Image (tube, rainbow, N blue to C red):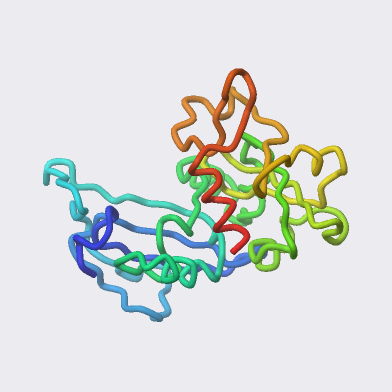
Length: 228
């Protein structure tokens, strides 16, 4: 509830039950928060008051509500964060750990189908790139969102994961041998990338180097968080 502790300013995160697993909505740049940690909320519950709080200056004339809806990457993220001795801590609700889909697209689809499930939104999200990742065990993400795992059990210590442009894991499966062979160093390699879906590629999770797609620095960190 301290505006200067996050680029989100004062923000509230709400956890929603969904067949895919826990889904999170985030409401940021608030002038004040009305919901308390652990409080159960219902439709119509006041979460806060719209404002312009952030670690940077947002003019009052541009006060707005920053809204996100998405999934949690790792339920152990707070342990990783604390282990890096980073401050201030936002627990599991750090923006690095909550990954959102296009909220306008989701809300438009929800208006047309009030029974829309979040898994349907993930299925409708375009795959921007696929990574093959070396892992000793199935990542926490696929344990909490088991419907996003395709095929049989993880074998051979490698999995292939499809990501959205901003790095939401859309699905995963056991990697094929040809995919596993792409890893020559580190823990991951790019299997494929769609330049059209990546667009301006602002997240730079994958980057083209001399015509060959490779993990960017931010992509390497995303893999680190996924596997922690």
